[in-house]
Image 1 (tube, rainbow, N blue to C red):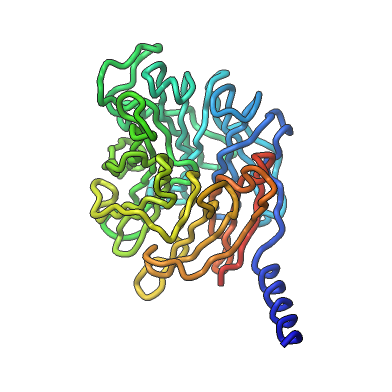
Image 2 (image 1 turned 180 degrees about the vertical axis):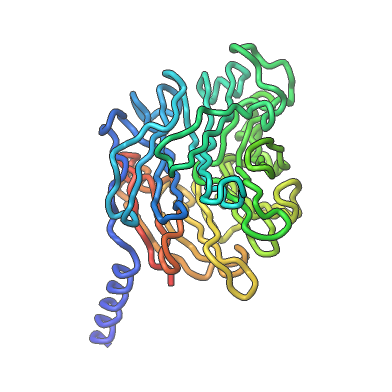
Length: 386
């Protein structure tokens, strides 16, 4: 029996090391002009290059202050990364929540056009919730894989409700939207079905004044069907406390929305399913198979099997703290999660593994960009999932 036990451990250890590559540091706090880097996002370009985005926080790790959106590039599937590139800024104020996506369906740009959605703000989130300040929503585009970018386009009036106030004017409405944030991580584009080509950006807002247990928060999304010319607001989840979110396509051209529960009363992810591209919700529920410590998470469609979409999901799978980063695979549109891979766990480190984003790098491998060891760095690894 002892001999058999030793053999089992050896095989298990080999298979785990074979499945996951080593961590490669991408953004290191204190380097390249910023004391802290937060909020990772990653996408793959049509030519296979990887682009990693983050918030570069100049003076410290706080959510508000002099914050820039920065980017790095990899031409070798994440083994090495370029020097830091500035992508967007808002003077000495907050510029963040990078949400990139490549539009591959616009006939005017047959080689694809890269969109980057992001937010700016003039006050701390807590103060904006009180009506003292505002948030704006912007996007930029690039035709050369992020090497150069257009001037920013302000779409706040199309996707914020009601119109945001000017020059620090206080809100006067009980049900107005106050704070606002795009998805932390990639946005998405429908690849099939009735809504093929629609770019959808998951988001969240607060409505009215601050409420107990963050019940003034609610998640929603916005979308464009004409490649960024105009935007429409999608439905809100109408689940008090739903917050940072990400969306992906499931079978029959439907949308799956995955949200953080800011209330923290149920330590699991909130799910919304839409059959009309996020305009309304067919159903919403808590997925108890996805434990969560009140943190951001990422989700991505990576294939299809038996007419259902294969999904990858990554989060800090611990109900009490930001640790135990885990990648899960679903073969049935997110109904169940049959495979899981433990990416990183460090019980001795505060906030050992927090925000993440994922990208498909090959038929068998998924790239994971994640915050590690109390936000000291953002690193990249790959997992062989089949």
